[in-house]
Length: 369
Image 1 (cartoon, helix red, strand yellow):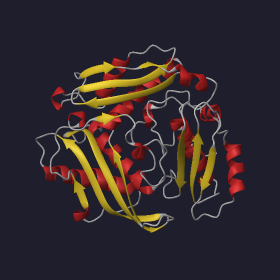
Image 2 (cartoon, helix red, strand yellow; image 1 turned 120 degrees about the horizontal axis):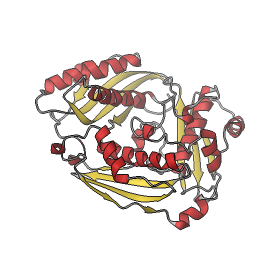
Image 3 (cartoon, one colour; image 1 turned 90 degrees about the vertical axis):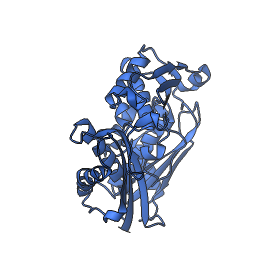
């Protein structure tokens, strides 16, 4: 392990977490715009609170979509069906989305970046997806919590939840689980001990088995730390698009860029640049050019090509000129080059709104060449 610490913690959140509700709404609207007009430009922000849903941001699109219908359909899909929880399809809705600023459109329409910023991509050999192990496990836990709620195999689960995993690294690619944490919303008629036992047996143990890891001692497992959680979602904690950028990336294991992803069309390099950086890093590691790699990109609004392309291979012995040559043959890192290479003008973004934007083999920036 190239980092100084031998232990590391990452967290993930379920699809019904307030911030993830907002990411899902923003990306669902974006996908509907792109379905009709692939050249749509969008920066869509959502805020949710107790019985409140508001949309903000700007778009420039030939598509005419029903923002309210998409929003409430998304809320329904996420399981918020009971108005008594303080958030549902009965909640108050307001829309403040407006047309994109012409000052931004000047540069973007000519293939320039939609904003300035820096982005980082990362890959390592800790998992088959070339993602860091802590965030990979955390995502699998929250995904399984959601699956158990959706298929009703755990009937008392309600939307919303979190997971946290602490690992002790025995060497660079081998670790043991030190601590496991989960929080799940549940119905009032279930006892805390039932919740704890079920989460351990039906969530933690099967997920750890996927990674060939064993569960830690009982005293190192926390399930619903306050003992009870009945009211899920925005009635308990407000949500905002783009607030889970560490969860969306590498769980804190690699550096984080300046901007979030959801609700932004691919002309926004916060999104497309981060995807390109991951694509480069993953292919460098997959092709044996480094054991571990972090790629950095930086752009300025209106300019098509990056101001910076950097490589950090930590303790790996890598030739910088070889990495640059490999990258130049792999992808054109101009805004249009990234969009074309990864075919980003498609309605693929709703799939990214939960369990991270990386490590999902079906996404184009995860392809190994």
